[in-house]
Length: 322
Image 1 (cartoon, helix red, strand yellow):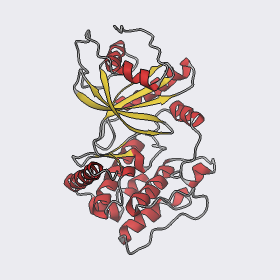
Image 2 (cartoon, rainbow, N blue to C red):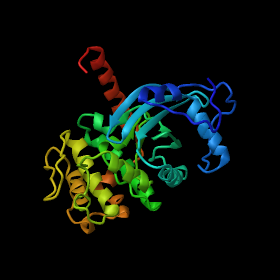
Image 3 (tube, rainbow, N blue to C red):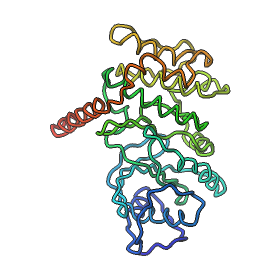
Image 4 (cartoon, one colour):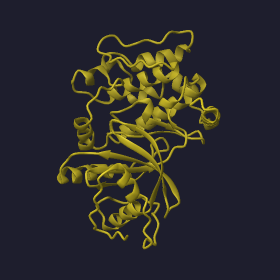
């Protein structure tokens, strides 16, 4: 089997897609360059082909409305990746528009935003290749202690502030899009830089988003403050280990003071003001007492917590309890 640049590849199932992507082309001599390059350049077309032919899937990490995420090993660069594969029933013209809109991902350069490597279509599936975070997403953890949660919140707010500085709304802030690793890093993923991709997924996968701000649920015009709401309800959930997943079209839920510090309760409450104009502006979030308290750059706290949780999970799996 030999795949050449420009070949049209047809796959009929996820298994065929996995098999095709795991094929390693012997003819590829050059690895992935470290710098970001534009999607529409001929050089990057060759690099995308190397991504296509030099990847070996290892395991499925998760599956949701948006598609399936795999852990993959890229042979040429010897890099572990996360590859999200999303089936989309769209025209070739829309595929081109999505690829064009994804160009901005090459420009995103923040320690709080997941690193983007490549994206490509194979038939009606888009594969988005990003860095792999070995701690996974926050939604798989039990109640997160506040001294850890505070430092995670700092990273999330910094990541969102960076996106907002680029005029990018995340649009899908929730625990499953907040990733951690054993080095104590916290990064955001799956933000909506491509309007066409967001719209195409929404048309293909029907469902409700419990993390949406009231104005989004009601179909009103929304902006940055909708992301702020989602921050509040996300941290309410991971801090209390109970899903507050009712669509908030009436009064927002409130955390009790007692199990939580006053500053954390105030942070969540301010983020979840019903009226968007009453929520903190992006620059005000960094000045909130809860964020200031934990803005010490101490990644070791998160690292130790992630490592301990992963070790406990492995021990439970060994005993057959998970």
